[in-house]
Length: 144
Image (cartoon, rainbow, N blue to C red):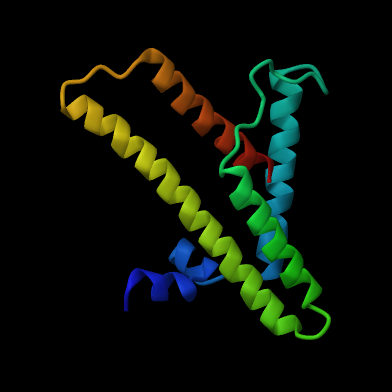
């Protein structure tokens, strides 16, 4: 099976490499994450005051974002006629998005490592931008 066929059938369960959890487990995890996020905000900064560097960096090019949003809208619209198919397509879209995101971070890391391996200097600015991108993504993960 080539990569395109594998991606065509990718499911979030495969991304996690473990069976899907129950809805109750997911709800409990989401509640715990929300409580932790509120606690972090309470101790890290005054309520409602954003950190100066909290600007969210784009994870994908704008054209890709529009395509993914359009695809999501189509999936949602199809729910009325084919709910099961819509859920399967939503799972596939999420799995593809996670896969692309992981590949994006891996490629950025590989490029930096390649420069280091060749003895090249990676500028502090390049490293700063990479770290900001990681922080922006990490903050979003914790806020979910």
